[in-house]
Length: 267
Image 1 (cartoon, rainbow, N blue to C red):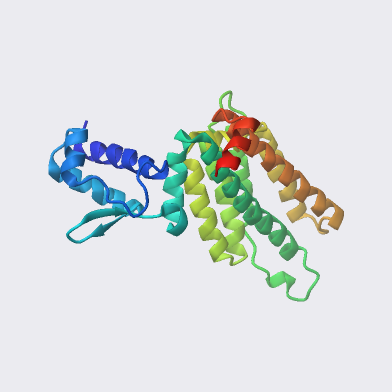
Image 2 (image 1 turned 60 degrees about the vertical axis):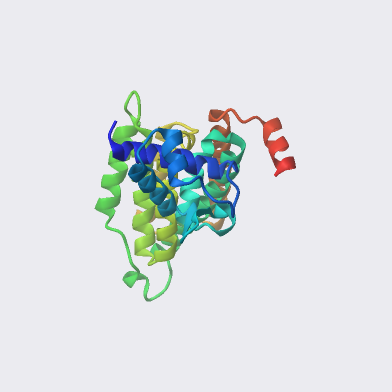
């Protein structure tokens, strides 16, 4: 095992302890010597390990004191949240809470992209022809790839989800929604790092994802846009599907309704 792998593995273990509350905010992390002794590494490697933990945003170097544990849940940014989610799978109830927040944020961005792009294409205004659009051929090519993968005996859900994130990213780019695109990219990174989260996004058959994109493509290419009732129905269906995604994630981590209730009571 190379030293780089050792550094990554030990940093992940220390980060997991911080995420689990085994090390409390404001406390000093174990020293370089203590880390070296516990994990049977030399001090230079232990120093690199603590440096990596600092790059995660979990600790802060204090001159003459060592590394102080940060309150990652209170003060952490999106990168810290990403690492927290990755390490939270050892704490299933916490992971489900975090995943629920991630899914709700993702649903809002996806809805904004899909409905916003649909509205732009079918805007009844003199400037509608100048509205930003995505090359239909590029969208169709991505959807074709999605369908090819979905029809495999064992679909690669990781690749399927990456393609779908890319499709939404194209729409947000056309809408000039740069902040939403940045958040979507971060959400994509979070989810794609956690196999159970990827699997949960396919709570229904992969073919269903393809059908939705095909239907959207038909709407975008039509002369008349969807009715308000159709848009409301789509929003409701997407909301129900995401509830299934959250339930699937909980099931994959072995979280029951009772354990979620107990976690909420003690949180």
